[in-house]
Length: 120
Image (cartoon, rainbow, N blue to C red; front, side, top):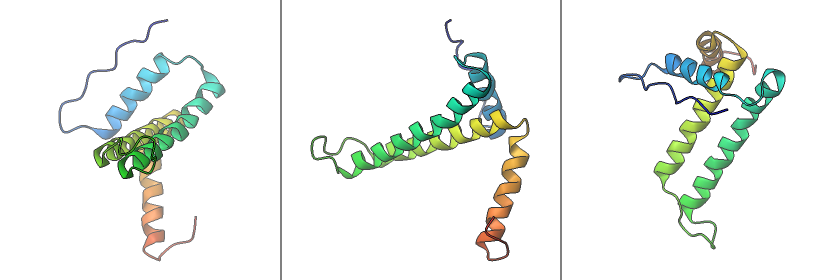
């Protein structure tokens, strides 16, 4: 099975949630595993992306003497963006309304951070 091309890129400014939904639809149409296994693999993809952030930080700081400085801080930024995108697509996989779920959670975190809420 050949993968369909990525959906067309939206005009600027990018509509975050429409783009997340388009990426989710594209991944769903081209996934090798469906159902619970597909869901678990999509969430597991986050670990892979976080590992790429770590690799980029190590490369940007030259911490691996065998490789030296192999990445830039721009690479770290790009990898962090990949983590965010992957997380939002995983969230979309779990709910048809990720924007509302995320907004509610962000509000709770903001409240908690300002000292006005519980730890959950």
